[in-house]
Length: 345
Image (tube, rainbow, N blue to C red):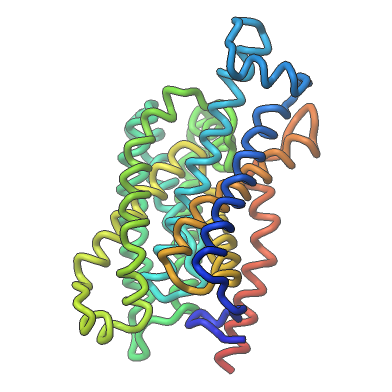
């Protein structure tokens, strides 16, 4: 058994054929969860009726529910899950920090603060406006956390970056709370949005964020071979012909696009970009050519499973998907911190 730079124990890697077949199996799981998500909801509809109206929209009440409510919700979970999973993977590679996650390093908090600022101070109410403010907030928070986490003689370390992210997140959360508590309208919007909900989204919202997510996904996937070189160290990466400046800029752009767009439509869903990359890395090793595609498939699977579980447990009401993911992710984060601490002791 080996250990990767993040201190995670690795099993023997499967061959390429096995990895390809595993990716197909993961896609099958994702399709199965999509069907479950379309089938299950507060209104009970038989699977046969769901399957029929899924392909033949007859204008009935069940067809309206399936096409206008459950399908956009399912597609949103797929897009947001893939975006946050990929953002976490790229962030861990760029910072060489196994604890990196858009929620833990303050990126989601920065996007959230900027959105609340746009609502309470500027009176913006359109999703398109939220997205641009989310991008600006995510980029600003990333810069501040990186600056704080790399100060000092010892340079950066995973724990310093995590502490800087926690400090920035707490500071932005206090500012955000102060603004929403002074504006009842903003408070109502914020309470629903901040819990990481996938409901209440229609097809128009998906079309507005889709271009940003597609560009972010392409940038992240295309960075896979270069991130492998970067994992060997800056000097080795330069010797292999990698230009670190453009590589880091491309990675930061991918993180900003993916996190900003996802947070704008679904709220800050924590730990998703932490759990899935580490689980995939444990199974397949640190090769980003496989790590990124697997994460893009398994992260939305986890988010869909959490959303379905939240609907089933609290029927006819529901528990937000972000709450379920956080419930699973917090113990995993503690496990990673303790494992890292033991590895450094």
